[in-house]
Image: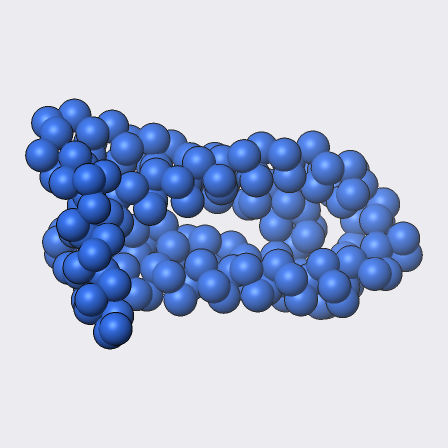
Length: 163
């Protein structure tokens, strides 16, 4: 079975058909998807800007992160669900779409960046949690995260003009 066969099967599901045929499902899911991505990117940006030393410098990174993460993960789950529903509407076309592929690569890079940050840099957070200056590795992670999420948003917008 090829990837095209898999994407065709996804496209042909009752959910895919409903997403294509309904006058309200696609625009509703798209609106929720965009709002969820705004919340994901916004809450991540708050932490990233703290890591870069640009904002919230008087707040502990752990405290700020603990306040943002529930919002981030809730919105991310919602974005994944709505994104998957949007994908079913035309899975083959999305899978072949360059901006969609770019968005998926940037999402993967954002995830890898987050994992590296949490498994390496976060281990030393006790040393710099309340400091206005963060280590270079934390700044790098914050800067890359901002770049990746800006890219995800730009690629997502680009998809709308190419599908």
